[in-house]
Length: 128
Image (cartoon, rainbow, N blue to C red):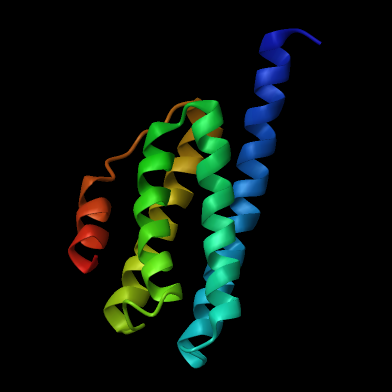
């Protein structure tokens, strides 16, 4: 297998696993809205975002890394009890999830990360 094919296969795998992880984040958020104190759900969501960030970093998708990194910071503060879950935080996590989904779709369609994440990053940073 040539390096290009191997790299392409890794990107295809990244797209597939990231989409699955984003679906898990979304269903986790829905569960979390009903059970805000459930640290296990928070941990699952955190792991999904962390996994996306790690692979994106390896593949050089900087916008995915940046957006997932601030999402991870927010989730970590929730896990540590430094922030309490509220509607604003739930919305921010869902917005970040949608933003990641858009970036992943862009990578799937064009091979590049088209999209502006500055507003999403600012929204999450404001909560931190």
